[in-house]
Amino acid sequence: MNGEAPAGRVLVAVFDSPVAGVLLRWAPELGFRTVLLDPDPARGAGVLGFADLGEDLSDADVVVTDHHRPELGEVLRDALARPVRWVGVMGNPRHEGPHVAALAALGVPPGEVARVHRPIGLDIGSRTPAEIALSTLAGLLADRNGRSGAPHGR
Image (tube, rainbow, N blue to C red; front, side):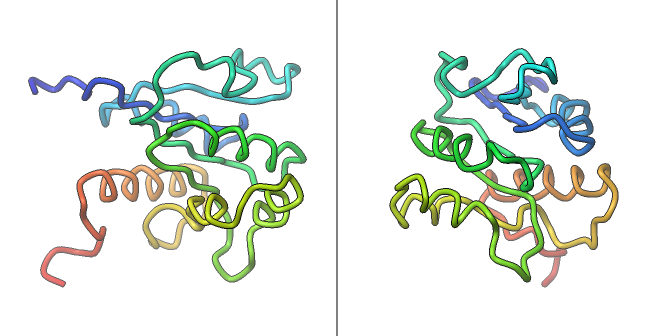
C-alpha cells in the first residue's frame, strides 16, 4: 500500500473536545482522513451535522467524544441513519450510557441503539485526553483488523 490510507477510511470525531483534538492530530498517522463534527456553530467546527457530509461514509468510524452534550441523541440518530462502519460513545462502562435513553426518546429502534459501542477503545486505564485517544485509536485498529486487542500470546 506504500503507506497510503485505504480509500474512504474516515474518522469522524463528534463534538469539539480535548479528546477530539488529539484524535484529529494522531489519526492521519494511522491512515484516517479526519472530520470534526460539532452541531454548535459557535464552536466553529465547520461540519455541523451528518447531512453536511455528502460523501460515502460506509468505511467511516464515528467517535462521540462527549456524552454530556444535549445534542447527543440527535447526532447519534443521524449517524446511525448513515451506512457508517462503526459508531462509539466514550463513557464509563459501569453505568448505562445517556445515549440509550436519548435514542429511545427519539424513537430509534433498540436494534439500532445496540449498534453503538460503549465503552470505546482498549482497557488501558485511560484518564487523560491523549490516553483516551490512544486507547480509542488502538481499539478501532483492532476492530478493523479483526483482532481482540489483547496482548500477544494471550
